[in-house]
Length: 458
Image 1 (cartoon, rainbow, N blue to C red):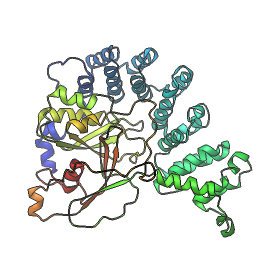
Image 2: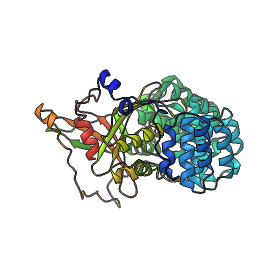
Image 3: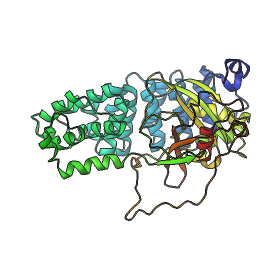
Image 4: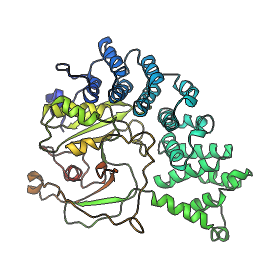
């Protein structure tokens, strides 16, 4: 999109997060409350959010808490604390916890002091929210007051992944903390994350872990050594234990499977794990995505697509939003802006600080329904490989990517590689373009690219 287009399309291409005029007030629902995030900050908007946080429907309260975390209304910290204290619904409480972490300077002490009063499934949500907000600073909490909440390998992996922010430096620091704390299970989780991200903590840190006299760390020696080989003679490496080999195989099997969509005649190429060039918005409070489309009158007759660059604050809430491609339907445009403004980085990927995350929303009924976040307590997703009792999946429907006429005239072709997560209902929940045909930096004048068409078709 050219700079001139940015000036001309004032309301559709360059809208600040709180700059969209509001139409007639719809009845309160998760979708209509989600649109509050587009209100200019004022005492009125703060009162509207506070009223929604006291609504009898849990879905409305959850949406209001997500809005509060993104919009930072006046008095929002105290309002969210009151809502959390009275909350009975787990999904709404999760959003209120995130809002408290986003808005309240005393969130670490306040939430860790309330851990015992929270239901067990919500305690990891406190840990995740604090890890996202504090980053490496959450490490001390992770080896202290939060450690009992990290009671399974997947939970510990997600916490330390959020705390490390996919940074080798932070991963190294966390590995050193784990060694110093004698926490072998945490060290395994940290190194497993590093393997998944394609790097390891520094050799010096791993050597220190391998040489640690602490019995707990010594019990992890074979596993860490098998992953890294740091400072281990060839004879010792040849004697890696079977348990270590199984752990490494499990870590590799946990990497997401890849689905290849051909947009031309090229052959598939292997893809390394890396940050997606573009990904779909995911993990919004239940009913928000479909509800926002309904509240704005967004037409779902055809699967239109919205694309925006979103820059996140340190605590994980959107700070800046630059729309790149918006639907022609005005209702869908407004809904897209709200969904982008309410998005969070996913639990397994954090964009580098200050770098925009390119997000997409496909306005299709099934795609919008799949944006809902999994219920609290749902096990962390694991890749299931075909074989044994797991049958090979069978294709029941193929939607071919559209070949835009403008690109056909240019004879444009290529291979787009995407990773896809399918939810328990069989819906496409999370699509990421990890190897593009182009750069997506320049979208054709009519808003098309082979990569976006591949994403839309999947």
